[in-house]
Structure formats: C-alpha cells, structure tokens
Image (tube, rainbow, N blue to C red; front, side, top):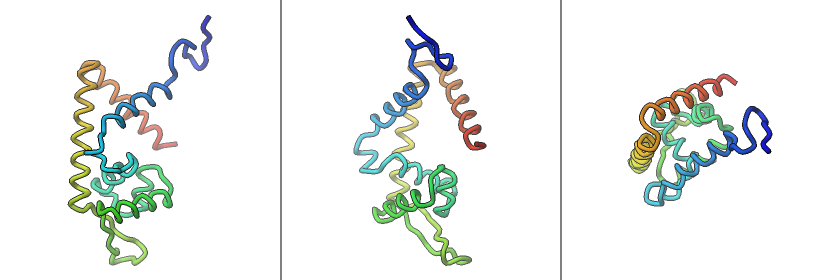
Length: 147
C-alpha cells in the first residue's frame, strides 16, 4: 500500500534524495587529481572570483554564504596559493581577490571535468531531456535568488 505525501508516492523517492544522488555522482567523479584537497564550496569560490566577484562580500552574496564562511574559505584558498588579495585603493578594508596561476589551473581542470559529466549525462538521458533538466535547474535557481 502506498500513500502520497506532497504528491509523491511513498514508493517513489523525493526530490531531496534524487538531487542528493546527482550531487554525489558529481562529487564522486572528481578524483584527487582534480580536487587536490579542495572542497566543492572552495571550487565555487574560485569560479565566482573568475566571473568577477572581486571582494569577499561579493563572493558571499553570489554563493549564498555568510561573510564569515566565505572569509574562512578565502583565507584557506589564499594560504594554499589559489588566490591573492590586494588592498582596494579606495577602501583599505576591502581587499580585491584574484586567482593565481595555480587557482586558474585548478578552475580550468574542474570546469573540464564538469563538462565531461554533462556530456556523460546527456548521453544517458538524451540531449532533449538533459536540456530540459538544465532549464528547470536554471529556473529553480532564479526563483531561489528571489527568496
């Protein structure tokens, strides 16, 4: 006997489980060669800085982190040689962040791996279904930004 909660049959898995499995597949596909000890959130920081988030407060806002959380990750990335921080000429409290050569290299390796994963998933479900999946994720992301 199955019951329905939130329109999902008890025999089916809810969205949190399904998304969790997808995220696990992504994480499991990043070997030590690509990650080299980085956490996924730190990789996202490298990407945010590469896309123009030049200060820690910008990174925190873009990634939905606290300033303190982003600051801890940024300090680790700086200590490990992935980022450099320089004083902003207009405000000594603000430090501009940029990727080092090591940080850029790490970001490129990670982005290549993500492209490989997307190619793999497209092959699994077909290009139309994968394109629809991406569109849905984009829309959900836009909605989340408005909350």
